[in-house]
Image (tube, rainbow, N blue to C red):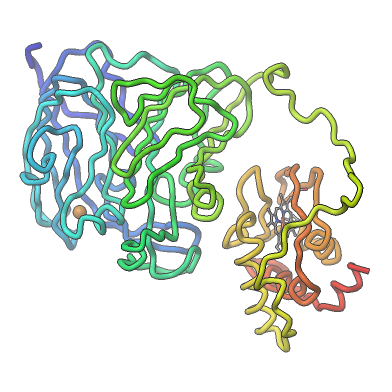
Length: 446
Ligand code: HEM
Ligand code: CU
């Protein structure tokens, strides 16, 4: 195919992807990618200096077709502190381009390559220390479509997982520097989709309508972890394994290596919120690897009935549902002697017991766990809040105007621990600053 024309490549920020190539002929495609080192937010109150391709993590999505001659302009913004380069896995050549693209701040490097193999490929910075450049967010995806393009679908999105290593623990506020030791130990504080916790939840969730076909371009930047990519409540109809030619039909969870990708496709059959996770599940619910797909449209009760009945089930010896006692939580038995101590002990209980669901700043998770931050439900009634921690809660409630209908199990905590954790909650995140004493808890317990 003769390369007859040149065009400037459309680049997009996640979760968006450029227009499909369709039936266009191969071209000279000019890609202008600007590297920017910039501060962003990892999760509420936690700042991080990201190193980015195009100002986002992951970097701008590049869409090409097989046979394109890509003229790549890599620009290192003059305000940046470090040199960088780019290794594109779609390139056949030394360093995947890295050897020709090493660029100092305030400079631009140009190199070109031809896309020989269709597929979805990771690109990343390969400047030493490579792990640190990738660990700070320097990765993205480049798609090489086959001749004639991929079959059309209704919705396409761009998602990339990455693991992050900070000096402080999950949720520790302020500007958090990169932690080399944790990176070496492969022990991340954050595992996220699209650069930060909640990048694709709530108002930022991706969307589709019942009956539509969805294609996700899913990458894994690493630097360390392999992703067990799964959508809760959905089955992939087709997966281009590892971003290549081979297609796997009917897949529940697909493995995406660090430095690898997959194209997953499915049709959405029923409305609801579907949760995208790394099914190494603590990463999802405790480190951030969770996103949402919101589907609107007609219900189909045959495919999914919804709850039909909530009956009582109490086998002999059965009773109140409870969480297993957590060693070290139930064992704290020194009573707090001051508000400061209540706050200190309470925070520790919170971070071990409540935070998994209500999250580090009490912000909750939209549609799943109600917020404790500025919660009108919490602030309206102390005894009720004590009762919830003691006995659990189920059924529909409204918190700050939003409905939740889920189950919180009873928490296995003693009176002191409940007094402290609730005092901590009431004195945090804009709540009403009530003090809860062990006597108050005892009163509700008895
Ligand atoms: C609801 C506190 C642990 C899941 C609530 C509410 C409070 C509360 C006060 C009422 C709604 C609101 O004000 O937002 C706590 C405290 C915890 C704790 C202090 C730790 C000691 C957990 C855990 C989970 C959880 C570990 C998940 C496994 C839920 C859910 C609801 C809820 C799903 C809503 C229940 C419904 O829809 O009826 N929690 N919680 N909570 N909590 Fe917790
Ligand atoms: Cu770099």
